[in-house]
Image (cartoon, rainbow, N blue to C red):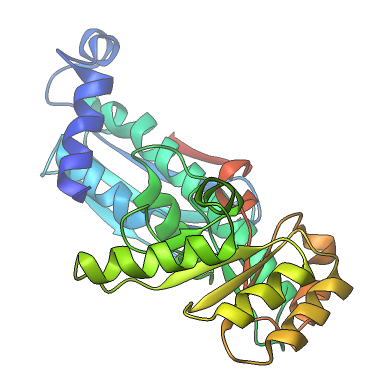
Length: 277
């Protein structure tokens, strides 16, 4: 979704015919200042989105940005100051905080995973386990935190998972059907296929015709064995049951990617506050 369109929809959802509390309490024409106060430790994200929201509410609001997206922050830091109409600062407050808290939470947890696998070849990937209509911002936050985006949606990559294999009638049927579909429709999409066992990995290797094999719900030792079996013939992605405590062990399997659904589906927001000054 275009950022300007998102801003338009967010304002329409929250404000409709007016912020009646601010209209009632704050005199027209009153100007003021506020600061975005950090009340936690982590990675700040969403400053660019906050700018768009403030300007969508009132193009005359002025921002003094102190911390850019991706900066490490601690309790007491100030990310930016905003100056202008007091009514309009308050009107934008919750929209800005909701987006920045969520995005900063995603960036912070992503950064922790990225640091945990430093020194290995593994890249940390997000998944499609995102909030509907907020996916672009959650995936932006993953990038800000140092991670890499997986496919954006169902349209930009072939990803054959266990249910596709079951419905297609097996691994070979799924792969050959996908190849025919892409050829018939003149589509150039990467093919990834999920393997739930070493036997299935071998079966995929025997058939070929894919770009990446997802090693799903293996132990770290099993993942290492699977990566060794694949032997660099295809990209490898480890997934399933990945947490901070074990991600390093999986990265040491030699895999190319590790996908982590918890980067976006159950993240804790970073504590931020917009304070009048």
